[in-house]
Length: 156
Image (cartoon, rainbow, N blue to C red):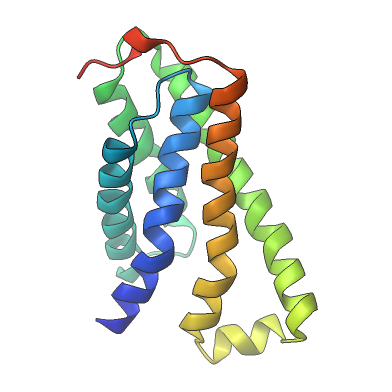
């Protein structure tokens, strides 16, 4: 239970940021209540997938398709190829943020990444993951600022 709570502490903001950034890239207005609800459901699904005995990284591919499907069900008039591209840009941004922030985190703390993983220090992973979750949401707000959303883009 503790592992789930720690995961959701970082997972909900990160998942919400993934939805927000994808929607912003597509020029869709950001409706934060819906984004947070979708992010919460997505985080729970991703936690469930990560606990299954799949090869590491499969959860990322599944996550791409889940977000594409969810956005496709709530957006009108945007081709699925554009949605797929926006989601891939979003995941690429997350990948880059994770790499940079982890490098900074381990350089600043002096911790060894391999021993931290081996010790399964969930609190350290959560603390190191919160900045990227925050940055995804900030990037979504910046994209919306420069790319005006189309009010008629939502079905609901």
